[in-house]
Image (cartoon, rainbow, N blue to C red; front, side):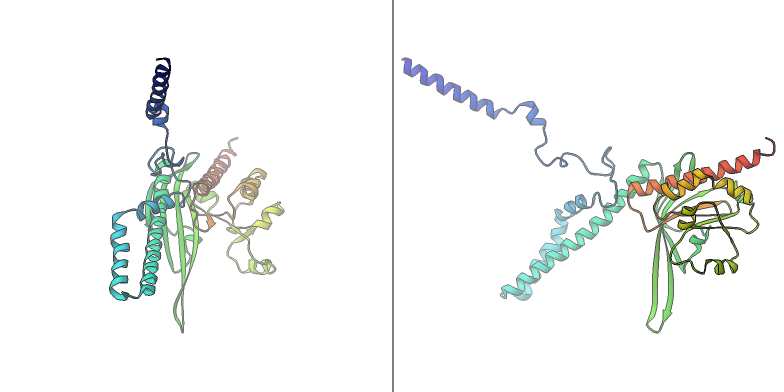
Amino acid sequence: MGAKGTLQGFLGIRVGAAAAEEQPSPERRSAPTGPADAAVSRDPGTPGTAPDDTDDLRRFRFHRLIRKRSTLAWGGIPTVVIAIGLFFPNLLLMLVTLVLGFLITITVCWSKADSQAEDDFFVAYAEERGLTRTKDGSLPGSTPLLRKGDQRKGDEIMEGPLGDGISGRLALYTYTDVWYDTSGRHETDYHFTVAMSDVPECRQSLPGLYANRKFGFRVFENLEDVFRTKERVKLESEKLDDEYEIFTNKDQDQDFLRQLFSPTFIVWMTDEAPEKFAFELEDGVLCCNVWGHKRSAAELDGMRGAASHIAKRLRDEVREGATAPSA
């Protein structure tokens, strides 16, 4: 009896333990079982998951596309049919056809995923910052950069607040030079990211100001200036002179320029502005630019911040100049 009771007790303990193992605890049931990021939606509209750049959602979009039945319908099934229909029973050619079809399907899906991820990023970026987005269009030819080339276009044009009470436009801008020779038509594209803002207060005090990046050798700089319609601005900063070449109208008030380019503003231009940053001001329109199409939130925010910083600096200086006589 004692041995039998001991055996029943032992079996009861084992059965109870097995039952306990089969009943998952509430904590275990609520925990995610896949990869850390699998439990979080990566859709751009979800709070806290906005993409940082155009590549952020590319892998997510690709996985979604490759698993669709429609992908199998236009990619997988036709490849198998062609391989069997044209090359059966040649196993080698059938295998080559299947591999080529697979690679073509992967390439098309990756290309579509890249385009969708880019669109997701700009939609989310504009929504988060209260900007109105237009996927493609044109920009007004308000400054020399915006008038360059034989063809011009704007992509991802976002309009609204740039920062610090300044509004304007942010866009990916491209101008194209077209030429012909015996081989036919040729084109060269030049890509920029631009941030624009209207500063009508400057039309009288500062109708034209052009701060362009220096490039190449400047051996003939003085000779070139003889034939320019604009006047080169020289300031007491070697670093600024090394990085920028600044021009203005020949009848510009030099005192106003010296006040505008204060030591703190010069330091900002040389040390804090976005890399390869430049700007143009003409007839009250400010156009800041950097080379290349920027496709990350940090870079685009940097352009918005730079444009608002300069626009505010210009407005403050104009107001100070207007109140100076009464003071």
